[in-house]
Image (cartoon, rainbow, N blue to C red):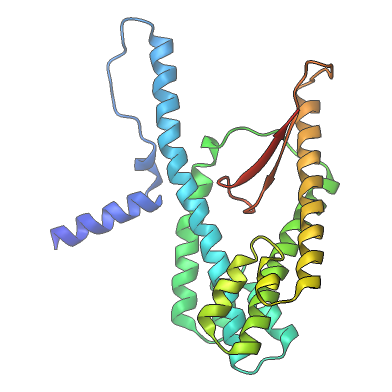
Amino acid sequence: MKTHSRLIMAMLLLMGFVPGAAWAEPAAEAPEASPSLLTREHIESRRAELGFLREMGEGALFTLQRYATLEALITAVDRGQQENQAFLIGASSIIPGVGQFINADYLQGGLLLFSDSIAGTTANQLAYTRHTKSEMTSPAYYSVVALKNGIMLYATLHAANSSYRARHDRTRAMWTGMASIVPGVGQAINGDWWEAGGLAVTWLVTAMLAAEFENSSRMENKNLTVNKDSESTWSIALLPDCTGVMVTKQW
């Protein structure tokens, strides 16, 4: 019994379910020499450790959302739902578990919703470990980001739907849909070349616009003076809301 309790407590701590223990600092005597430097090093080291835990939470969120949307869509198609209805059921699982509840798969829906809440809690509580970014206030920026993420969601659902209706292979449909987190890849796998090209180009344009908005806002907030020696950067997140895969240019 004690072993099980310790195992459960360890799992909860790892997932961030007991937030107080996650970033509680151990008591230590103040160093005699250069206390500010040692404190800064300690804080940065601790921030890096907790940043890794935050990235795990964000990665879990992304994976859960992609799995839940694709599984809900394929199940709806398998049960004879019309394409529009299946798309809506799949899209509703951007909150993992909702589409499963609609499909009356209550056990899987509950597990997905529970897992999503734990991963979301971890990521939110450790959000301060992310590198600070300039605050975005432009409606145009949020509109472009919403369009970019919407294109990705549509591409994943469309690729999985086409694959499953053509072959009735759940595993193949899941992987084809997952490939379209880079819009157009799943369509290319299905042989829909015109759709693949259109989705890829549209998504790339919106991603570049969002990056330009972010870079402009950063420069304005920092009151940077543009001159020949200044450096600007822009980056495109291949995985929305994740920090792992980026394409960056400097000039």
